Image 1 (cartoon, rainbow, N blue to C red):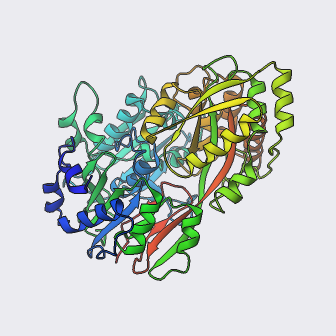
Image 2 (image 1 turned 90 degrees about the vertical axis):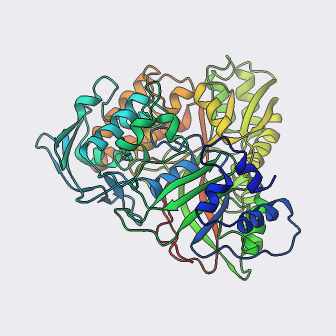
Amino acid sequence: MSVSSSLSRSPDRHGSLAALRRMGLTVALMSAVAAAVLMPGGAARAATPPGVLVVAQSIDDAVSFDPAEGFELTTVQTFNNVYQRLVQSNRDDGTRIEPALAASWQPAADGKSLTFTLAPGARFASGHPVRPEDVIFSLTRAVKLNKAPAFILNELGWSADNVDQAVTRVDDNHVKIAWSADVGPAFALAILTAPIASIVDEAAVTPQASGGDFGNAWLKSHSAGSGAFTITTYAPHEALVLDANASAPGGAPKLHSVILRNVPDSAARRLLIEQGDADIARGLGSDQIAALKGEAGVKVLAVPSARTDYLLINTKANATLGNPAFWEAARYLIDYQGIATNLLGGQAQVHQAFLPVGFPGALKDTPFKLDIAKARKILADAKIGPTTIAFPVFNEAPFLQIAQSLQATFAQAGLTLDIQPGVASDIYAKGRSGNYAITLRYWIPDYFDPHSNASAFAINRDNSHNTVARQAGWVIPELSDETAAAVKEQDPAKRTALYEALQHKIQARSPYVFMLQGSEQVVLRDGLKGYAQGLNSDQVYYDQVEK
């Protein structure tokens, strides 16, 4: 299917070829991209036009471009380019928090609130000014919608019942944010750097609301932010097109447009970047990266990543998967080193804790290794016999390859993993609804604090918040209390020790098996300048890119 035909038939109201023409993207460019994907053996095509950045990657994981809902790699990497928050993490040092839509802030004497002064003159892409009402609307709707990332804001003690009292207008230029949770202003600021804290344009979104959804259905495929770009076209599983916002408070971007082209096949992505039909390629295999190193016209950028890859086990799927003996055996049925070294070729390192290296308190020990005999004994002692387990996985590299490695080693202990490849967005939906047995997932911290990951994996008192623990069906009131104690500890050394203790407990006994920490390799055309990407996977920035 060609790009032009697929976009013209897209159900998205803006997903038409006419919309692409209005943006100045020529039919020839789009046809060239499609031809390169469909005809890998073809001759080299023309380079992408000046001012238009073409990124070849998979966007199949995208569920929603509403910052109150989007929680996937494609969406969170888009949010930094489309939206702004009151405060932001420094691009080079994520632990440093800087002004964004807020020019300054002042903590209250009791440490339970912050008053923000909005940046003068800041406007959304629509031209509407950024007001305290927009901050209130954005944060309260995110809590009330209670989508996948809502648990992040819940850490401030916010709920649908109390958030209206927590975020209030002071005057035309000031907004007050208060919290009931036993945490200090520094932690609250870290929370407000997360994508879910993005500020949306109330005046643009409210007319699009339907059935009390706060504009969620509309924002799934549109944008209403103040970032360097706006979403002009989104055709699911085809393309995302961003157009420059010349009035962005942070300054106009150097590019006119960015096209994220869905190219599920990594071999096709390699061909596109080699031929100059793409400016950036993501998600290439280790063999493809090795072949490109030293090749004229391209350069490989190695970026440390905070992404952790893990197995998620649904304890409610059946009695076997709910048995802690199964969790323990699974830890010895993974060829960690073989996957990292032989399969991924340096694109990941063995890592067996929920905090990634680079975060305070991250464990670096790796106590588990492939030991089939030990796993068999654990299963036998627990009277767990041969069984077949449904295993939905992302239908793309490297997840399928990792799944096949797991299938081979689990089989040696009598466990048949029934690999069920699917589009990433569907796999996410299964995980969030509990409609799975075991699945392979990755986790990206939402903000630069150990609690970002701890709150996902070590909190679930009563299934009221949509954490990973809840998705695993794992109710853990005691661990939840220990996690709450860690986040409110003010002494840095004591706080680090508490997070280390939490990791040791979850490392030893939990329905998660942490395996790897990623190291992303991005391929760029030689003439590209100004591309920036940070430790956290959402820290992808296109605003300073030029060709």
